[in-house]
Image (cartoon, rainbow, N blue to C red; front, top):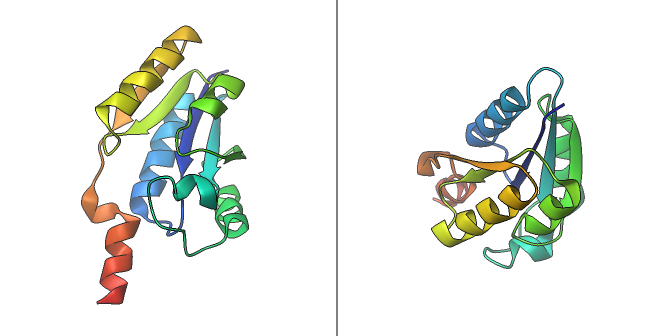
Length: 136
């Protein structure tokens, strides 16, 4: 059984999130599991502003999505503490993250016998852009 780990703020659920989860679940395979980490407010605020939705709401939204097998709390912006505990076969990363962060993730995943898959980031499918459009 293949385990895939993917993580999100999930303040506004949009097609980019759904496509990433759909692809992650496909990579896990029919018998595999997609584990989704939802960042706590404190984890989000390491790099971004506080989410509009509460952590509990965002956690429940993730649990409701058909691609997701298990939702866990992610207490840091970096997925690496969860990755070290869960030891997934695949860590999904976004090309919006720094090359340094992706390289560090690759090193950790290699040590546990897994790998990182980097998916493209589409700025048109970002929560920040959606929030900005709403403000306008």
